[in-house]
Length: 403
Image (cartoon, rainbow, N blue to C red):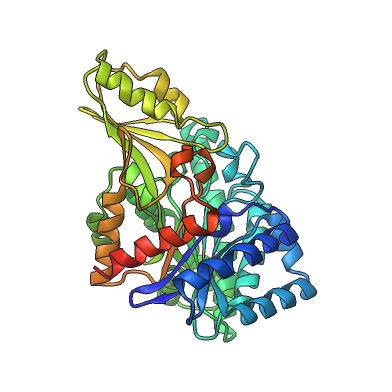
């Protein structure tokens, strides 16, 4: 939906359905109910998540035509997509497989270009479109610096194949489309510093001559094209995990002349850890343990006197729970936004409030998308029917933007 500060929606990755028929069934069931609460008299925007399988099926002319007709009837529109998870995202063990295929593989390129062609066909006239994607690969798959360099180079070159297509679409009168890189813990790009270093040391040096050759443009024009078509997906949960302050991230991006294509509004879990060996610390650790589940990665970034310590998943952090050097845990959970405490644990809601206040003061993106998807692992007393949960999240965000 349109707000005074940009388009606001939620990501449909919370709805199961790896095939298009099943996912479309979920959209028909839930979106009209959410729209009736949030945007009864105005068009309602959708943040669409399509698996590879669903994207293939929706690419069939009859399916796409039927979906476009449904959007028209429901007074809805699609302006952004989540192109990070390629395969199954529900009722299967996802963990690090959320990065498969990574950007070194042709399947990732083909899938992403297909998503952009669908988005271009669905996007209302005069509106820009965004698709968020993996931060190239998963760090732990590379065993040495040489492999990291190889994966980074290969992934960057493959990403540029998408950029070329987006530039051609725009050159031929189509919309501005941008691919938004989503840093996350243990991704090959996991924070703003790594993203900016990659952008200036890898992406632009490779991309400028590539587009000069492919499109016959000048070096300056090629650089501008890359900055238009490759932007940052600011996932609030992920940046909070990295202990990055929102105002500093935005200032650094502005300083380097880089754009933020999408704001994903999400919350992590955090808690200060009392002294090791005490009942209070044991209670906090027990509270984290209650959230341990086998489907998604729940990376933990721990604050110590010496800096930040990484654990690839919550079980590894739990195994090191008595480490006296650890002062705080932050764990990767996209928990509901409107709650700031879960018993002894807190949410990173303060980061969300700050980001939204900055967006309200001076909009830094046109696209805002709530991404809360761990409903199934929450305690029973925190659950509501899905439609009410989504509406509650979006209502809370709207209220923050109107403060």
